[in-house]
Image (tube, rainbow, N blue to C red; front, side, top):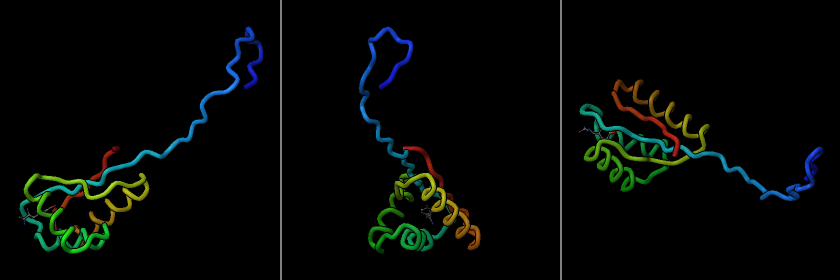
Length: 102
Ligand code: TYC
């Protein structure tokens, strides 16, 4: 690399940097009111899980308080959160879905 005005101790090549985009975890939170079947449906519909996977993750959220339901780019994670929150609100359930940087 050119380094005008330097003392000649020039770094010729630096390590090629390939920047991977940061990933975001999408989290589903437990509450006392959202029906279990509704959560299972959300996981099937928006996260492409089969019924058995969806039921298992739902139970994890129910018992532990929250679970990671997927890891995505910022844009996709944001879309998932919005879709889940809108769907829950439309059905008048208090289900909460959030994202955090991995
Ligand atoms: N705790 C809820 C119930 O007993 C079920 C539930 C599971 C709610 C997961 C939200 O993200 C959730 N009906």
